[in-house]
Amino acid sequence: MTQALTKPLTYKEFIEWYPNNGKQYELHDGVIIEMAPPSGEHEDITGFLARKIGTEFEQLSFRKLKTLRLLNFILAQAPA
Image (cartoon, rainbow, N blue to C red; front, side):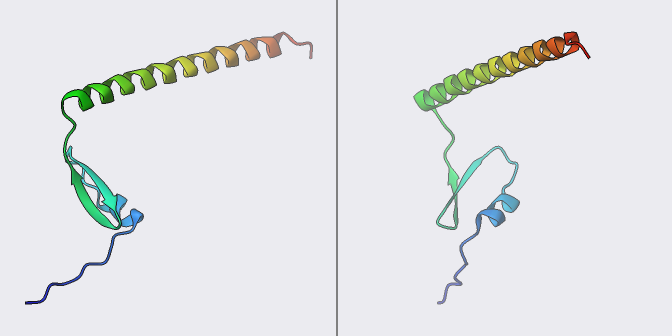
């Protein structure tokens, strides 16, 4: 019996193939690997990090917005 060899996927092919089915996949040396869902402590840590990163992103965006508003106010007050 012979087995057909498949060529390794490129990153672009992997991204085009990636399904939206709720599962996670990784590309290892051109081979698609289905990843097990996180569980237990790993899931807790992932959730914790996601919340912290989200909070920091919101704070940075808010600070940037405040800075832009202050700059616009200062520029509007400048003599023409």
